[in-house]
Image 1 (cartoon, rainbow, N blue to C red):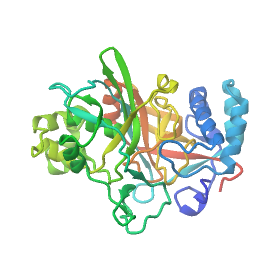
Image 2 (cartoon, rainbow, N blue to C red; image 1 turned 180 degrees about the horizontal axis):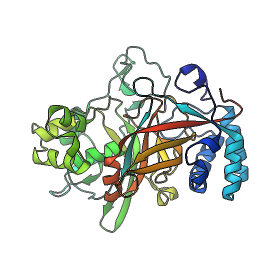
Image 3 (cartoon, rainbow, N blue to C red; image 1 turned 45 degrees about the vertical axis):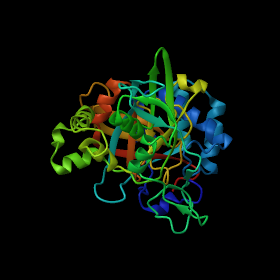
Image 4 (tube, rainbow, N blue to C red; image 1 turned 60 degrees about the vertical axis):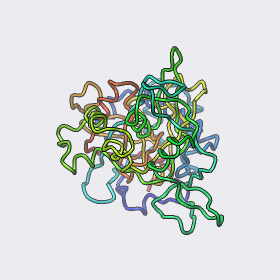
Amino acid sequence: MGGTVDFAGLGFVEPEAIGLDRLPGFNADNLADAWASFLLSCERIVSGDAGIRPGVPPDGALVAVCADALALGAAAPEAIRAFLTERFRAFRVRPAQGSSRGFLTGYYEPIIEGSWTRTAGFAEPLLARPDDLVTLRPGDDWRGLDSRLSGGRVGPGGGLIPYPTRAEIDADHLAGGQKPLVHVRDAIEAFMIHVQGSATVRVGDELIRMTYAGRNGRPYTSIGRILIERGDVPLAEMSLARLKQWVRDHGQAPGEAGRDLLWRNESFVFFEIDRSPARQIGPIGAAGTPLRPLRSIAVDRTLWPYGLPFWIDAEIPAVDRAAAPFRRLMIAQDTGTAIVGPARADIYIGAGDASGAIAGDIRHPADMYVLLPAERAP
């Protein structure tokens, strides 16, 4: 599975297959919802489209399953269940180290107000991808470049050198060195859009969808974790709203504590305006497919190919902020800098503030199962 990757040899897939009908809650799940997302991924897989942020490529077995799934198309729940049961085998996924369970977080698409021009109320820009940014794919080897970096720019000697940090990019655009696409309220609003990877910005009567166009390749650092570790915000009180308020209370101008905290995360994301018809369905994930709330997940793209189905068994506040059993078929359609490891997933919750509040509450253990095509299952 996944090009030259042998999952059986990596040590994080349990060797014993589990029949799909033995997965907790499988027979009760509304598979038609996940099936629609799977078909969208299959269209990309069969066409050979690598997506926006290319990852581990699918192997022939997944391509063949996808071709047959597209031939089946929209189908009755019984037919979908029969197809999945026949063509896939489930395997428990272990973390690379530590706990025997996986770990879940949630993310969402912000819907915010904005302006084409910089004003007192809309002071922070979202920037377009620079022409000199080089993005590395998994497996690319640029000698001399720190292995923790996933991007850079060509240096004077022709080799790749690190791209500027968040602080350096900020200084450049504050000096007029970058052309903004659109402006949002302030630095922490822009920062959270970077973390989520997309946003819908309302400019007057127009809704503008901003989608991921690249990042500077620097490592991601959780500023929320920094506040917790420093004792600035107790773990039990940490939330998206509390994080934003701390930054705003401590100042966002260069040299103030709020902006300094943002600069601790060197990763910086660039955007483009999505004008495709698919924007009416949902935000576009790294695989190039629209994301479906509570069915799309972000995974480690260096380990898993996009489009691969997963089964998640957890207890999380995924609907009304009250913890409840969450047992669903999910499709790998996105990735994220902080999503590292085999048993790590980020659930797309939806768009808007309500989804953001739920997403911010999800930091839960989970049992994760990968569905591998029966022909290549270890």
